[in-house]
Image 1 (tube, rainbow, N blue to C red):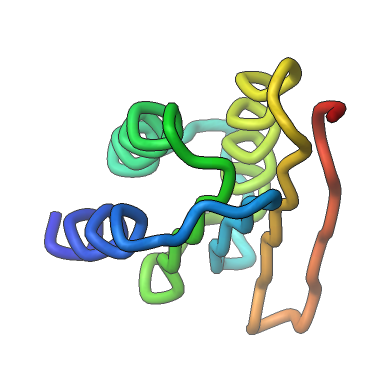
Image 2: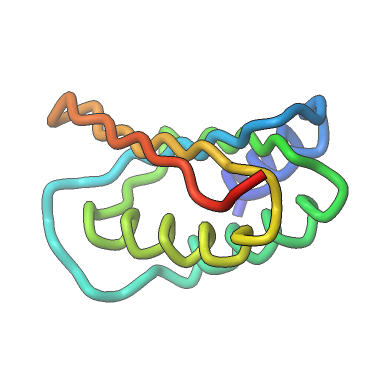
Length: 106
């Protein structure tokens, strides 16, 4: 809860620009479920993003598994298909893997 509040607080302080970046670090285990906490964070991102085109969420201290991160990333991207392109960064520091993609069209 504290981490979510910190992330949302940082989001509110973000200056609006063209791209959005979503940071997430996840563990190596695989699951098909998106955690309730991450669902809550996504809903807060959606609500706060109505007036922004850049979202910077730093949840580096929260562990999300790989498939959860990708599923949440795709679900969030689906909401922005009619908005300016968003750039998402899903970074797993343990594996040194970074996935970049852009969704939506200008």
